Length: 117
Image (cartoon, rainbow, N blue to C red; front, side, top):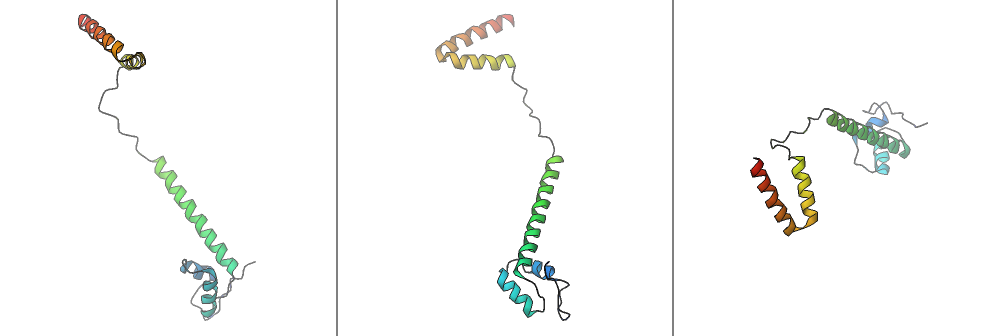
């Protein structure tokens, strides 16, 4: 098992607390600093504590992301009316046929629409 004993003269409750208090210090330097302050631990404990912190942080971030997705408001509806499906189909057909033929068909369609009116 890992050695987590702290000397009685140390201000730290345990070695893990000492490691978490110095997140940016290199592992070998951290072990040396711990010995100087009366906290004895190995480089393996440093790696284990930092890995656990990374996993805990990742899980917290994922939980926040899941909650934000779960309680997100639905997208606002557009104020513009939806296009008529018949007009959309007509546009698709006209794009396939070509410009000149499309212009002729549009003129015929508008003439018929004004007559039916």
